[in-house]
Length: 570
Image 1 (cartoon, rainbow, N blue to C red):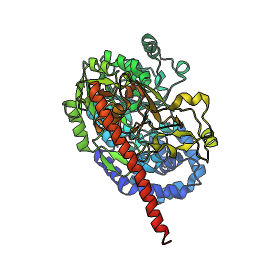
Image 2 (image 1 turned 60 degrees about the vertical axis):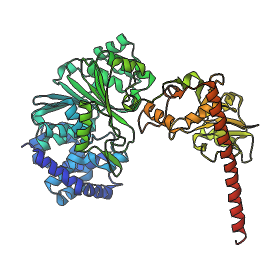
Image 3 (image 1 turned 180 degrees about the vertical axis):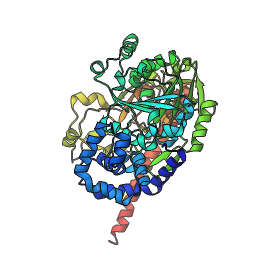
Image 4 (image 1 turned 180 degrees about the horizontal axis):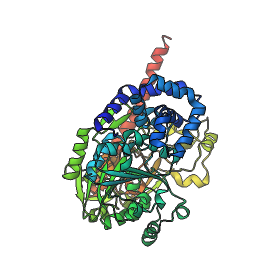
């Protein structure tokens, strides 16, 4: 008997309203007795599959029988407790939704990520799922997406690849509950070496492991098509792009979706692959999603929609389209419609981008780079052309720093991004016993500007440093101004402006990516004016900074006066 969508939604509703609390309370009572968090799932599964049902639904699965033999020996009392306290439908609900329990994902009791309902619904629309479609899911994890797909598309099939044994067992235990085994297949093997020609599919959905570098690529991979694609195009990067190139190496797909983090969409090391995908028309759309959609991670994620023969790419900045819900953000049905409409029709958050525009932007796949309003600067110069930009000293270990911190005030100082504020005073910086010769290149002098790599993107012009030696740490960039080309005061005036911050937002890679690269910073457009005007504005800005310094000193004096008044009565 197959589970209908209505019943599936009722089971999910019970889990959301009551089941989560029930599950968490039972697991809390078992804490300290159960060695592995995943065994809790197997306890509920064993409670549902009595011997009769086990033989009926999974009689030929030796791995499941061996697993349940261990569960019976180690946790028999817990299995019976579940059977006594919960109905079969309630146990079903927990089995199907176990991996969606926020506590399990947020504290990493179970690895991986659940696919939020909103992202699944948006993906179905983008993939244009139709009757008879056959979907392929690499890295299927615990089968949540697979189950959702089967329920929502009863006239479609799905095949999956997963290498993790526990995930395979979990999926095998879920499938008989919904009764759609004849429309689903799951293999345990290495996706990179899967012979895609043996699978029937025309659509693909995948969320590759994020931040994974496949350093063992040469030893691990024996797929001739994938290896040839790398060699022919001289690709060096082995990360999430490898998962994508694997699909492209076999042309049977019509559309494919990959959920990826923002880092791979702009980094220079991946530019050659991005260029290849644009030149060969594989990218149909890039959609930047809101941050914190996945429990336990705050990184910005994006949907890459892959298809063939695309002349232009629809870039969609959907980073502001979401609803907040406690610890995570969610995409509602209405949000899905807004995002899908922006994908279909150009709007304030979407734009069709040509290959030439990608080339002009170093093949960046960050949507806001193209959807943000153009900064209106008719005359400008790039920051990289008027300054030398380098990162502060990033190799100073905390343990070494602590040893060198001086309790007494010295002329050797160290500055970090957190030190830049309205009350900045060189004398108040942390003192060091010494600054080594090799660190001298990371010290700043009057006329240099320091710029925070992330956060609020604060900047500070170094002035009146006197005899102080100021070592800049790795949280900051150092801008050495070419004073023949620009006055440092004029540059700092602009860097501290809201107009500059708007530029940074357009160059930045997303709300949850914390650091701006040197290449990105170098792309800042600095307004170009006549030398006379630049000098005039620089002098006025210098006077403003001088006044701010006077006010800072006066404020300190006033605070001291208040303390003296209080001391008269204490």
